[in-house]
Image (cartoon, rainbow over all chains, first blue to last red; front, side):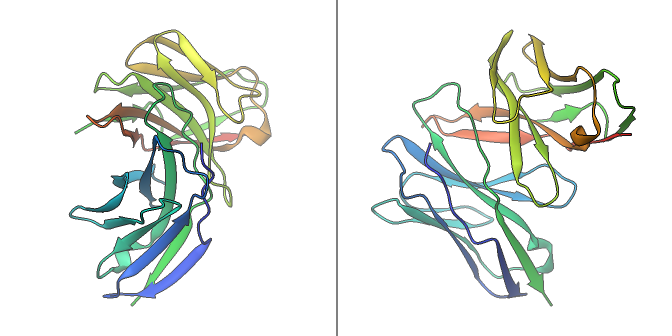
Length: 112
Length: 115
């Protein structure tokens, strides 16, 4: 599976839009991208998932350029409760028994 | 909603004890996973299972074993607990959508302290 690279940490302020970019240069044709959010002392929680172009749900948007070598998680108008660690993962659609590996994630801190 | 339940939130054990961490999911998922998470490190995969009685090693299987006798239950076993196994243990199960994209659902975690 493609290795992912994300910034270690990011800071922002309430009400701002936050964009976290993940690099996955070796992404394969069958691979898709998933983002998870983790609060302290909890398990990660699914945020959004996509294969190409743009995906939007009630929580976030995911932008994937045509070459798919990176993806950007966009959180609109963040609040203090968005302070968390965000993980970008690449998964293989073709594998029924996938070894799902997490990277180090991006620690997002939101200030008042 | 999918529910993944880990039997204990906090557990304290002594060095050398045999420790069982239990995980149950209620959505008939094929795949289940055990991770550990330590401060400053991300989640590290210990073992995963894609079917009853089937298991695959993750990145750090040493010192651990697993059991999957029923589809809904995946147990992590520390045969002889050591202090370096003090950690947060997270269990997950996964589903695939119509496009074959896999999504993980995590339990709340078990904070294990080995003294």
